Length: 372
Length: 216
Image 1: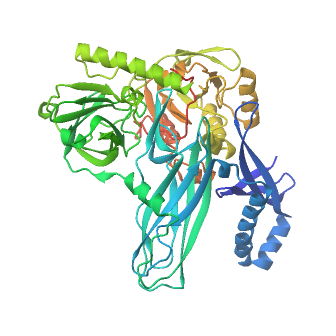
Image 2: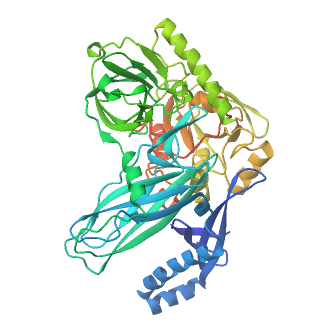
Image 3: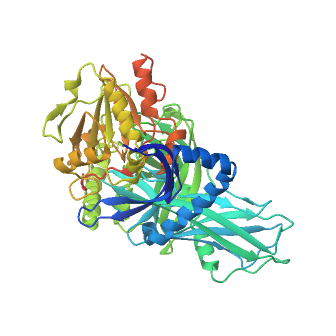
C-alpha cells in the first residue's frame, strides 16, 4: 500500500510525496475539481493526479547528491507547472460560481497618495459569499494583498451583508455583486512607471451546497504626477459600495445579558426620520448569538430595544458587544437603509430602561411586509 | 418554495409577536437545543447504517464522540481526504472511545445517504467509526444544536457533555492547515483520559451548514 509522507496543498492543487509499495518515491501533483453530480445532487471533488517524478530511494539519494540545493529551484519550478497543468485540464468549477476581479477607483496612481481599490466578486444567481463573520456556517472571504515595495493596504471595508436563514441556521453574506474596498497607501517614490497591485482572494460560495474557490487578481496603473482622474468604468461601483459601508454610530448603546438573550438598548435617534423602521444586529463575533433566530424589535418614543437570542456558547463574562446595527426604512418613500458600527457596553439589568412597546415586531414579519 | 417558507415563517412570527404582546413576554419563542457543556448530554435513540438502534445510554462508562458529517462538504473533505478524521477514529476507538458519525442531511440535500451509501462511504474513506447514525429528520441534530459539518461533541464517561464545537482552530478547506491547527477534540479527549477538566469546552464550529429538512 502506498504511503503518503508529505503533502503540500495549494488552493487548486496538492503536491504529494508518496512512498510507493515498490519503495520508490513519487512526487505527484493532484489537481482538485469540485463538480456537482446531477444524479445524486452531491458535490464530487475529483482529483486528477499527475506524476511529476518518480525515483527509487537510491536514485533519490543520487539525485539529491548531484543537484543539492538546485532541488529547491526545481521544486519551485514544478509548483507553477502543476498549477498550469490544472488550469489547462479543465476550467475551475468555481469560476462559474464567482467571478473575481480587482479594480481601482482612478485610472492612474499618484505617488505618496492613497489609491482606492476594490475586490469585486460577482456571484452566479442563487449563490452567495460571506461577510467577515459568516454566521452559523460558511467562511469569510479572504484577501491577501501583493503590493509594491513601501505600499500598505488598509483592512478590508465590508459593505453590510444580508442575513440568510435556512432551517433555523443563520449566515451573513452577499448575493449578486459585492465589492470589498481597501485604501492602498502608495510610497512617495515609485519603483517603476507602473504601480502593480495584486490580491490573492479566496472564498466559499454556497447555495444549497458549498464550493470553495480562489483567484489571484491584479491591476497595473500608470504613475501620474498630478491627482489622477476617476476611472469612469469603476466610479459607479465605488459610489454604490460606499453607500453600503457601515457608518460610525453617532449614539451610545448598551446591552444586558441574561440566560436566554442579549437586549441591545439604543436611542430612538438611531431611527431618526425613518418611516416603518426595522433593525437587526449582526455581531462581528460568530459565537455571540444564535444567528438564525428571529430578532425582536421594540420601539417607544425614546428607545429602541433589540432582543437577540444568545448562542449556546455565549460567554457570561461579556463586557462589550461589537457589530453592525442594520437599519432599514424609508424617508419620503425612498429607501434609506444604513448600517452603524455599534460598540455596546454592558449595563446591569436594573439600570436598563424599560421600553414600553408602542410597536413590537420581529424582523421576519417586517421583511415580509416589504423589507430588505 | 422559498416564498412559501418565508410566508409560513412570517405567519408564525406574527402569531409569536401577538402572543408576546398579549402576555407581555419578551422571550423569543424558538426552542433552543438542549445540549449544554457541563450538563448531562441529552440521551437519544437513533438508527445506524446497519439498522441497529443506538442509544447514548447504551454506552455506559464510555467516552463518546459525535461527529456531524456531509460527504460533499469541502470542510469535511479537508479532514477526510487528508486522512485526519480516519486517523482520529482509528486511534481513539482503539482506546475504547465510542465514535459516532452522524448524517443529518435531509433526503434530496447534499450529504444525504441511504444506509448502503453510508456504508459505501465508510469503506471508500477508510473510516472506522463505531457506527454511522442516520438522522434524515434532523432530530438528533436539533437536539444537539449541530450547525455545521464537521461539528464535534465529546461526552465524558459520566455522560456529561464536555466539548462542543469545531474540530480545530483553523477554519478553512485547506488540508495543509491541519498540521498547524490545534485540534480541540484531541485536546478534550486527552484531558478526559488524564482526568483533567477540559480546558477549551466550547468553540464555534466551522464548515457547511447542516442540510436539515427545510421548514423545521
